[in-house]
Structure formats: C-alpha cells, structure tokens
Length: 600
Image (cartoon, rainbow, N blue to C red; front, side):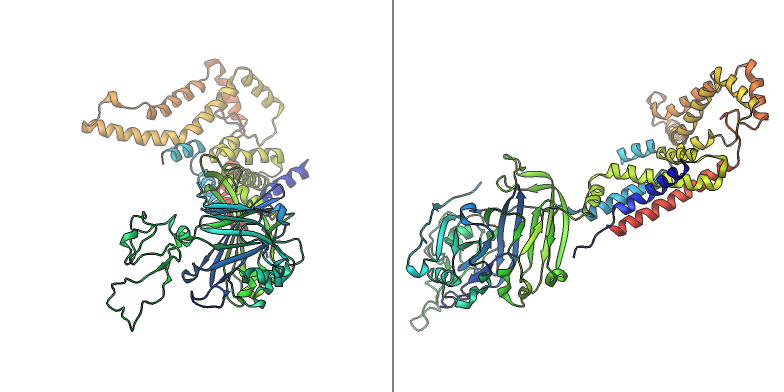
C-alpha cells in the first residue's frame, strides 16, 4: 500500500511533464505569363506567393488554390497544377472569396493557460479560492457562363489528340479547365494552341505526372474587366473619373477598353503628335484586393495532397507557400526542404468558411466557431521542390496534450493543482512528521490544498499526530456523544474560512464609518455584505459554547496534550508543516510551470 501511494505521488507530479513532451517535426502549380503584352514569348511568371486551403473528409479532399502574382502579370496569366485523381472523380469551380482563418497558435494559447493557472495556484497560498472567484468576477457568387463536358477548348486536331478537356467553367472572370494528357508534348501543344508561345522544355516539371492517374487544372483570366473590378472598384485612379462610380463598364475617354482591360492615354494629350503616336496600352497595376479569388477543386485521395514539383521551375527563387489544412495533421516534409519549412497548429474561435468547403460551417452565417487547423509554411528555393507534399491525417502525438492545455483551462488547472499538492503533501508530511503520520494522512493533507492554504491549515490542525491511549479514547468518545466534536470542527472550519472575509469586511466597515462621520452616508444605507463575517463570528461563538457540567471533561483533555478548541493533539510540528508546505508548493508550481512551458 505504501509503495503504491509513493508511486502515485511521484506519478501525479511527473505525469503532467511527461504528458507534454514535444516530439520534433522535422506549393502548388506553375504560373505562366507573357512578360510584356507585345512579346511573342511566354515564360514562367514572377509568382510571389501561393495560398492553399485544404479540407479532408471521408476520403475526399477539397482544396482552394489562389496565388498572388506581380501586378504587371495580371492580364495574361495561366496557372496549371496537377491533382492525383482521374478526371471523372474531380470537380472544379471558381470561388470569389477565400476562407478566412486566423486564430492563435495552440502553443501560445497553452503557455497563456499555464501562466494564468500558475498565478492562480500561487494565489491560493495567500487567500482562499472563494475570494479569488469574487475578485475575478469584479475585475454569394456571380456566374458568367458555365460550359460542361468539353467546352470551347475541346479536342481540335490530331496533334492535340493526346490531351482531353473534360470540363470547362467560366466564372468570376476566370476560365478553368480540367484536362488529362498522355504526353508532355500534347500538353505543350494544348497550351501553345491557346496562343501561348512557350518553350517545349518549359513544362518538364509536369513530366512527373504524365502517364499516371493525374489530371491537370488549367486556369486563366478570361474577362479582365470582371476579374479586376467586380469586387473592387476604387473611388479614383489617375484620369479615371468616368469610372468612379463603377457604373460605366465601357469608358471611351482615357478609360479602360472593355476587351483589352488596358489604360489608354488621352487623345487630347499635347504630347501626342504625328511623329509621336499614341503609345500602346499598358497593363493597369491592380490592387491586391482584386486577387481574392481561387480555384476550388475536389477529388478523392488516400492522403492529403499538395503539389510542389511544378514550382521547381523557378530555380533558386523562393516562392513562399502557405498551406492551411483543416484539423491538426502531420505533413511528411522531405529532407531537402525541412530547414525551410515550418508547421504550426492553430485554434480559431471565429473563422469565415464557405459551406461547400467546410460542411460544419453554418449555411446562413459563415462565421464558424472553434476551428482547428494546421498551417504549413514552405519558403525553400524552388529547385529543391523535387517531391510533392503528402500529409497524414493524424496530428503528432505532442499536439494532443498541448491542445488540451490550450482549450481546457479548468481541467488543466485541476491536474496542475492535484499533482503539485499531492507531491508536496507526501514529501513534506514524511519529512516533518516521520512515522507518526501515515502515508494516507499525508495524501489527505496534500489534497486539502485544493481548498487553498486554508484547507491545509484546517486539515493540519485537526490531524492527530499521537496514538490515543485508552483513557483518551474514552474521553473523546464522551465528548463526541455529547456533540462537541462535530460542533468544534464546524466552528474551526467557519473560523478559518471566515478569516480573509473578516479582514476585508473590517477594512470595508472602517471605510463606511468614515463615510458616515463625514455625512456622505446614513446608517440606513450601510450594505449587509460587510456584516456577514461578524455574524459568522457570533455563530462560531455559539458552536463553541461548553455546558458547565462538561467543563471538567475539557480540562482533562487539555492535561493529556490535546487542544480543547480543535480536539486534536497539540504538536509544534504542525506549524512547521504548514510553513514548509506553502513554500515547497510555490517552488513546485514555479518549477513545473516553467518546465511545461519549455516543452511547449
């Protein structure tokens, strides 16, 4: 029994630390653009960043992909990425808005919880939990046209026969096609027949997917007007007064061509002469707000997938990728990019998610509560992206206790309190009292700290550190039969529990008296709350009353080394125990709290 209790005490103290041991954790497609509007050459564009949102449920992955490109490339951009599934199982769409996921890292939330709980536990050694509670109490999508089953870019010629267009959708100013390719040459011809004069070796990165169960999603801006200005209409741009209200979609003077989407110079410009004709139109630098659209693709897969290989075409350039996956998952980051990758686990109280993307999102209100997600940041030189990213659906083991701490402050506090109290009670009890107090009583003394230090004081005071002799047992039985034992124990409990309230009530009462003397308050306006501790004292006095015929019994009890007030043995070691317990408990809380924070 004793060995079991010893093991329990040390286990309770170390369980929390071991529970939080942290295990070490050691983007998508290529953007092809025309470098300038009048060039016959196409090349890989200056892709600035990649954003992906993934939700995996029941073997189906829903993925929204969006990229931010340099403003000079907005007009003629084509984006292509692979998906690991046959086309008949893939669906595509274009979304006007991206999910909004923010929240906080669960490690930061867990640290904050530990700090708050540690402060609370330290405070229990100063004033009781009831006062702590009192103190804390004060203190929709526009569709242009949808064409399914081939679309305008179907199979046109024999040389294109090894590329098949399975679906075409035009929406939000973007056209997206779902295609399959039997050869890389066919994919090259498919892109070239869209007036993209690309180099044959520029699609080498896609050779990894040719001949396998992969499909390709190809997207480009098909309506520049709609893409740029549907969701964002700036109040004014230089020379764009006619477009200020957003009503005229076909301005004729120094405006925007409905077909080209280019800024034209004013025909009345005095610099325009026969020798100096009107220069060709140039792309309009467009604000970032217009790029908040993405391609939504759904496909079945065994594990979560994100394409990285296509980005390798950018050479040594770093194209940051931010991948957000619903839930806590484990990415299998290959060795070459571990040093350039970071994985963090988040909790978002209020996120903005679309119902089609996240089935738990409310249909009438897109604010979804209590969302857990994983954010994977990759900022490696593109030529190191030699493999795609596959992601396990389960989170690393260490994230479970961290998430528990971050999201369950109360139960973390309970575990923290019990562990430190139990360990401190057993260690100090055996050191101070030795064999005179059993291990079971030390456990009770430690757990009494769950009611703050005053609970320890009460349990220690009523603790018997001596073995009762026969005459003492008879005497105690007589007093117990007369009801003195229970009344004295209740009186002691009320007295100890009432002590902090009595001090505060006394200070408050002195303030009320001063207010009455100043004439700013009448006696009838005195609140009853400060009087309650004094009423408790009257009750305590009544409970401690001794009948005349029983006074001799209490005198005999005192002669035998027992306190008439507590009806337990008088032992100076009790005061030592209370003092050492409080100090060691504070040390344990500080050490364990610091250790846990280091492990997060």
